[in-house]
Length: 96
Image (cartoon, rainbow, N blue to C red; front, side, top):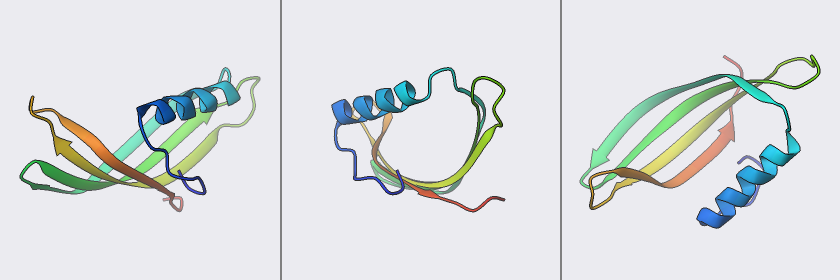
């Protein structure tokens, strides 16, 4: 995430998500839009980048929070044929 050190490994990712959820009790994601661009596949590897827009409703009638971001993803096809994210990066993006 922007401004944070890399998160390495499944346990670290789970801990990061649980920490975010603990900091935002009763918040609700009311809109999540992701536009995927420039999908490229080379054998068992693929890459793509995305534009992301999220709207979150805080509790107690506080104003909605909107965020925009950019993602870059590197994926690898597993032996069972499923694609798994091997590398993900996020940056803030300007409003559309």
